[in-house]
Length: 280
Image (cartoon, rainbow, N blue to C red; front, side):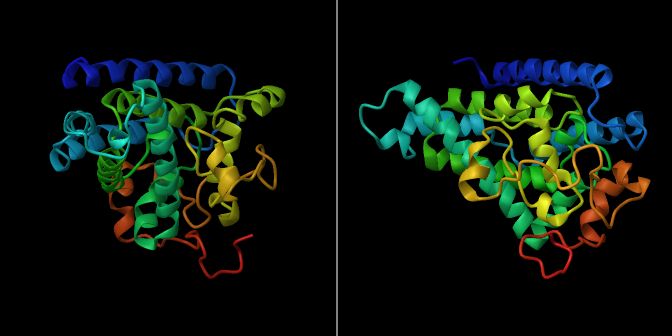
């Protein structure tokens, strides 16, 4: 296994590769017309990625790769207690288990009001493109890192599985948030195996019932199994409004707003089981 530093560098190759590829496809095959200035949004959404990286290094000094290596060496975690389990089976099982945990984490951020305060800055983006998949408040990223560390330890996920999962998670998040036009016939096939842009875009509708659907990032099965799947938005993809109904001004494209919004903005009626008449 390469050193942790090399693994981190290897992660950057698919990250920038997928980001650049989807950006090019968005330019030539856009799915929807954008509402705001693309350059302004990109500065904000990519700027928060840099801030997230710095904050995580400060508050989460131990990486999940190091935790996975420690768990493997000490035999910690469920998979490490099962005898005669091949490394391939461990890797596949760990990747699938981690994906389900990320699904549950996503649901939790929609269900708990204080966590929704953080997560709503992701949904407040008035447009939907590859950088929306990177737009998360630093505190949410820190909480997510803690959940991943705990999950890797509990599962006993091999370090290679963690490496694969992190690449797949980042790649799929950028892919399924991209503003690319995929033929309906192709989308129907793709969403049998992974979350597509048209599938996840429903999750960014201003309609609360649609916002609280299609939580998956990688595998498309959890939403179907858990009853949170909606195939298409009520008004169609071309007509649906992206974002949150109570946050419609251009301030949501400001990096400063994104940082401070969870501490003073109204959260709207978006949390799961919120008491309101406009949830459907």
